[in-house]
Image (tube, rainbow, N blue to C red; front, side, top):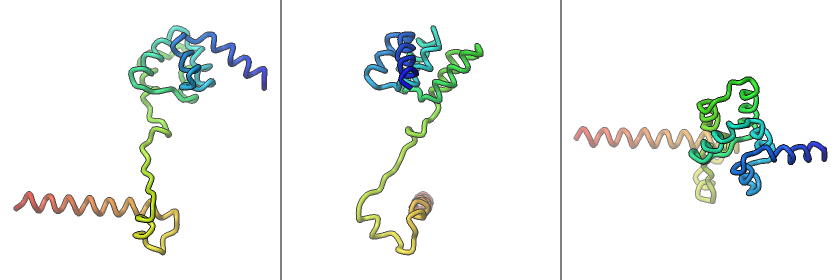
Length: 139
């Protein structure tokens, strides 16, 4: 295990300075960086796309880029396509806190049903507002 870790650190010496700095600043993970270190001159394209889109490749994305590079199928357009993918941790989340919500939820709901109930309530509210808007426009 220690030998693998040492090999990873040695492999980082193949990174361009800009990417190595991101690793040093802990903005990019070690394993992602190791995968990107195999991309040769395309590392510059990866870095430029990262800067432009303000994103950091996941390990999975870096592994796919490395695999495409090994098959001579990686180019700037493919790098952009991969880096522009929505990542699970980038999906907007809504977190509801406080007694306000617990007090207005039906008591018969199970915990798993809360999200569906809230989604249906919002859909109903939006439909109601649309109907009101249409009624006002018809006046």
